[in-house]
Length: 229
Ligand SMILES: [Zn+2]
Image (cartoon, rainbow, N blue to C red):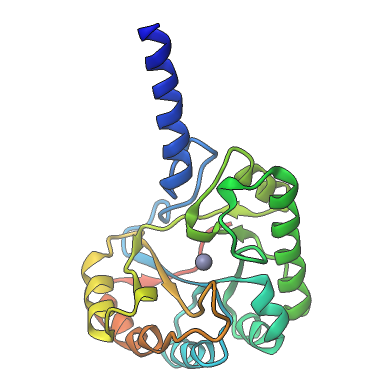
């Protein structure tokens, strides 16, 4: 009985690890750092497009010559397709963040497949034909089938190395400090150009922080790249 109890506990622990730890291998590998590079880092933006923040962020990236990856929410793509088109036209990578931004670890395979497919279709339609090759789950929450469904859509599941809680709006200076101090060689930084729950949520702090984050990371000797296929 004790043995079975321990086995059950171990199984529950592994499942919890797979769900809550975004880079866990339990439910399939998630890319959480850049492979084989010493001075390169990646900037990623989730939950957009957002009518206020995304254009400002794109202006900064263009001025600085920095490529980034945008994990776009399908329902926001449907609302602001021209911003999705601009992200693609300016050479950034488009990733799928699903359609509704519901937490997927509690949803069955049919729901997950529908959400990821709708997100993909919205992004491909808005961008003029770019099919996303990467997927990031809302909050990083996964279940046994999320990664494999993304794979059937041709999308590699991506986690992140460093989150700075910019979505909680801790202040521009704090976002900059956490981002510049916390990055290591090969790190993938999670930022938010949009709000997963409020289509017009305020992301000005992130947009204002971005030029200083780029300056700070360059001063540490880092270059910027998008995610490997
Ligand atoms: Zn999100």
